[in-house]
Image (tube, rainbow, N blue to C red; front, side):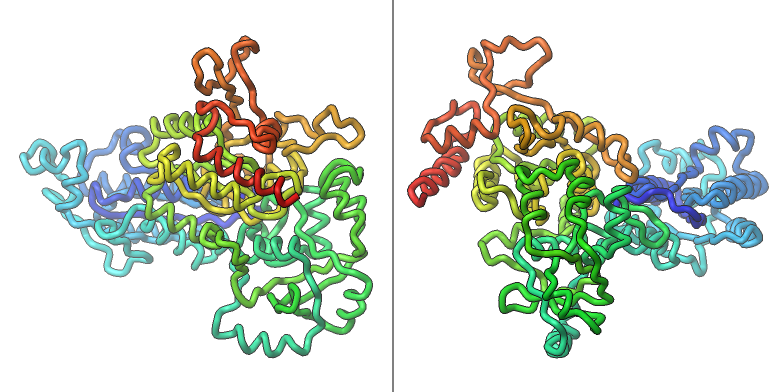
Length: 586
């Protein structure tokens, strides 16, 4: 989703109140982290830290508590006036002082939301690492809220969070839902776009659609329809209209609800002259794939497909030696059809892999169940070898030093790829073998399919792949070589794109700066040690064997076996079996 700062941001204050140890600070901190992922300006004002700095001159008498809250409210107002969401985590035990904070915001014309984090004192004491409750009960800490000083429970808070019942992620979601309901942040921040019709409307609309013009879409456009409907391109709600395409081509962005999102790859629906003629006088059309109606396109717009301009701005080339450019230039279409998409049902391919095709929302739910506090993604078009596993393990261990539950999203491309790439079903089978054999840890890995087709657009496409994964809740992105096997058609000895530019571009892409970039490290087989190692700057080429993706596929085609240190034998057998079958069929 990747939001930039809006032109006219709406600031407010979320005032989290509750006993010490109730979870206020953790909820505020995690909510801020989530908002910053989408470049929504937020600030966390924590009571304990402010007591050590701005309010270090104050004690815990009732009058000092009043002044403490007055100062924090004033600070929250200053940030809110600049468009920030002020997340205040403060015990603030007295109702009249919380009301005074609300009144101060209302006088300034700002929204104030009181959030009561209701946690039983027994749980607060269990959570208390500094043993403050024990010290308070022994008399070492006077005027301690909940023990020797009262806490006045909010009578009618804007939000009640039962922190002792819900996981921290669910508590944060309640705060975010409040912000969505109050129209402080867009709904797509919390919920990716979902363009599937409710079952209650499906049959009526299918029947009504029989009166509409039929537009046939091919498999590639059906894949893009799946990408749109499942929310990977949020906030895009359909195939691009002309203004959306122009913004995408010229700025690599998409604007919706006064927010600017990263969108580097055009998602368009090409049509023929005959299709254009059919749409005259209609505001909606029905999309068919073969004989099956798959959905509606409403509020339609037909406009010229300037193919060379689209290619030049997407690929930096118009050479038909490039596989995707060839598709675009040589197609028999002349126009583009834009409009809002509504699918009659979720697209299924019935290839035995649909259970791997998890929507962004399903991946988010699974991450919550796994208690993930950081998520890193790895995308390949090739089978995984032990060099990749080495990089995955290194990334996990680095994250584990800071986080409790890092989770890997292993997310292979599931849409169209070039004919000489390894098919999806083979890659998935090979990845699953690595999970089954324990080479990858099942308990901390989600294997799912990213439904997008490949465009082979180098660094431009890397931005799209990163943006799509943010929608699913990813924090860190392992960036590989972005040429994706494409050579310069005019000079096949050179890559069309510099292999280092993908990682560099991601670190400066507007709206994606929240994503932590993990550069791909090349690993090779140390022939002396018979193990995979990362290559250093001064490695001795004689001691190492570098097996690229192209070389790996060639070895499999020719029936060669790599050293076991390169790839688990069962995983290699999946690849070997495919090429043996392929050669036989061919």
